Length: 265
Length: 357
Image (tube, rainbow over all chains, first blue to last red; front, side, top):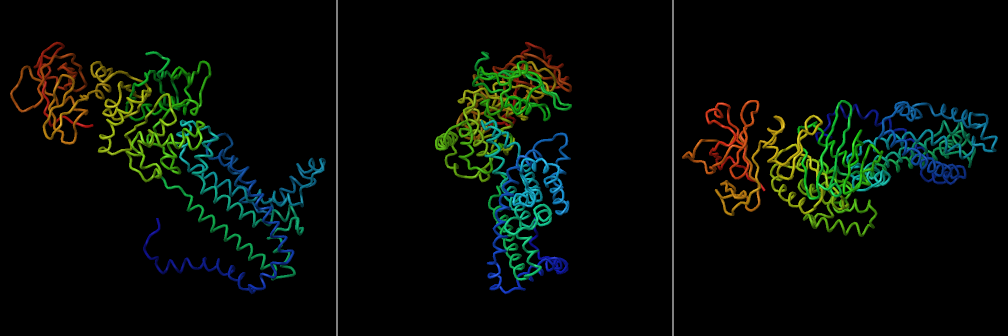
């Protein structure tokens, strides 16, 4: 519970260091290029293509994270079984390994001569350095954020309510959709936003596994890096758009979580 | 009892070091209370009937339908059992309104939304909750929550009703008022009802028969009178050792008459009239060889039915027109020459009798 008292001056001072450190670079991003110029640079074909690609790939990656991650989160939240801890650690791993390493790993698995990739190649399917690879890299790096949030959300739902729903005639499937999901909704929404934001900021794994081809695999972050070599203003413009998207996502997540949070009975 | 229509239970389950084993039957319209200390397996019994727990061995059937039979491997999932459960803390859905809570069962059993909501409205009306239909379940009182839970359980048209500590979440003042309501309501429902209680007053006031469980086993099943007359063990004697009567109370204030069958008690009850319960401990009953002059308002001639030695005293079961238990010291028992058939006078002070609805 937050105290209503005024914080001591010393605490203000000690806290301001990190807050300023976070605010300063973000302010620089907004101040270096005049707003009018930003708009014109955003209209560049490179920026537009990168924005459109990022929007498409991150939405698909987030949808996949929800569809594939929800059963996994429910399994981890509700059941104890052999190997549960191993599975739990495995799901957390992409959060902690360097994305570049994850990219190399994807290449070794799904690349032309990779573990699985070499069999796909025989079938005439090649995923590395395609838009599909962008989605795969984003899914690997971002889905653990959804799984973690969803799992915590499911764990917080009172199993007594689920039992009550069963005795009222609801199948486990119906209980899941009418009791579990509505009660876990704030956590699920926050998981979706976190995973989407992480997919949007993906760089290392995409770079390694999908490359940097404009219109095909060059996402916002890759476009920033490419533009930085020749055209600072465009790099900044794209960065500002990314910042804006992240901010919108964060505010939306906080508001939605606040509105949908269920009062405890 | 014809097995066809009631609830028949005979099952055992082991969970870790705890073993629960019991066998009982409940007829339609009958209420069986399962009482016992915490950890005795009361809630386990309900979970087994509801299908939330699988027995290691046994058979559970209701209304002629087998819900579980380990010998044939039959096991109906909770949603297939048509069992209404009123959970201990009521387990109302916090994301739904009162009416949506009650409509949940009908919806889950395949009714259309409009039909389910209409059915819910009728049940809310039956339980006097019509005004609360659109409220969230967080904003209503404990007694209202209990009634919503009952309405929700009954709206899905169960073949049996289970109540887990229906008064556990209520304060003492609310309990008294709701007990007689609930009893009358259960009688109207005509369902086999199993009620779990740790408070013997709840059990004896609401149930036709009481099943006493201790450490996972069912010690004894019977009416209050049967348990009082022939307690199997000290715990049952202790538990049943409460003189409890359904009475009809005269109107008016102050000292008034309460009729229990042909026997008239005199009690202090400003708050109540009409059907009520009277309760007093056996230690409040004094025995004498003849009618003594003095202040007690309630003096009854009677006969000793049985003398039960308890660890520290004697429990004397009397017939004074109704069955009454009196606790006396061994010394008093010896000096009164208490034995079956002995004529005695029993007296109770009016102020020692608790009266509630």
